[in-house]
Amino acid sequence: MNQTTQIFTTPPQSYWIASTPQTDYPALDGNVEVDVIIVGGGMVGISTAWLLKQEGLRVAVVEADRILQGTTGHTTAKLTSQHGLTYNQLKSQHGDEKAKQYADANEAAIHFVANTIKEKQIDCDFSWQPAYVYTQSDQYVKKIAQEVESAVSLGIKASYLEETPLPFPVKAAVRFDNQAQFHPRKFLLPLAKEIPGEGSHIFEMSPVVDVKDGKNYTVITRHGGKVTGEKMVVASHYPFYDIPGLYFARLYVHRSYIVAGKIKESFPGGMYVSAEAPARSLRSLPTEDGELVMFAGDHHKAGQGEDTMNHYENLRSFAQQNYTLEDIPYRWSTQDCMPLDHVPYVGQLVSFKPNVYVATGFRKWGMTNSIASAMIIRDLIIKGESPWAPVYDPSRFTPMASAKKFIVENLDVAGELFAGKVVPVPDDVEIKVGEGKIVEIDGQRVGAYRDEKGTLHLVDTTCTHLGCELHWNSAENSWDCPCHGSRYSHDGDVLEGPTTKPLKKVTIHQH
Image (cartoon, rainbow, N blue to C red):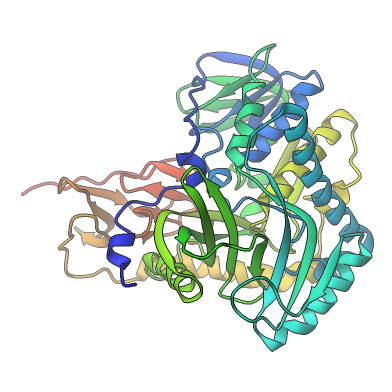
């Protein structure tokens, strides 16, 4: 079936967002006082706010856009403690006790979601599913056997297999039982509704541009609104309030892609991910128009991919090789913050700011880690401790686990900082409708995009976060930062942090 041109006629759209109503919480206007300020209205922010409100605290969620539309709205939504081949590595790098804390936190998160759904009668397409990591490569067979052994030793129900229900042969696989999948927005939107009232708030379209700290914290939004509180949770995916923790040196950002396709065959159930690269992930997606299958993967460092449309094409091709693909009604992409030592940073931002908490670095496994983070932060705020806090501690220092990665990733960033400044820009300044490219105007490097009406949009391509040079992302029509993952619209507006400032617009003086 050679329908590439027809298949990708519509712009990328997430099924999770398309199948749920748009929210309409007010923007922050004036001054508000609460007990806990939560910056970021994704899965971490909403879950944390909901849990803290249950404890009687007044909370304010401050979101730059609409809630649950960022990474939460662009996930594969696998609710699993199986995070690739993780546990053998965790045991060797962090020790048995911390590996057990990680396993327990993520298993508890699955059951928290299941129990909340039952208790509140939330209809969110939840179903229990086995989760598999499979390999078609000899070099991963031993690693899979070790993973099974490590997972079982930590109390996870794991087994070793030599075949899976997928339509292609594998060399080995690990299966975790009692895992789940769901619709994250259908689960979280009802919880969000319970947050406002009794001194608590959700504010949308309220990008935070500054934080003042003293006895209390005050966050100030672009339109001048202020929220003051004794404690603050940074739940903005990539920490925007960063300098004290140097997170920009401890995180790097991956971009991944998803196509949701209609296939002729019936999908056997289960959730699957390959051990080797290029990553391939599959799960079913029940919709009102029948079952789709999500094919995900093909990740690369943000801002550093080839022509980004190729990634969608690679996934379409993978789906076609294994199934009779009839249509691709949805496709989308997402960014994930990757920690240097395979464990998210959750807890106190830095030891000398005890009332600021952070949750970041979920390494593509944000569904259970977001819920675990919310429970950890709630416990740290309410009780001063959490049984899972040590493994997630943002102040941990793991030189053996991180040193090589730290050098490689930060050399990469330094390279991008420098490379962008000296890359020659093309001589041909012809820009077609729907095309974006770097051009040189009056000796200045400028990002140019021509919209459907033929209007040219020009921006300064220096990232407003830490000055890296941006690259054009043709799959999403955005300017992406290869250093820390900030993203901007073709017009320079912020789409994704850590940056909080838009790009400068460039005007041409007509002679």
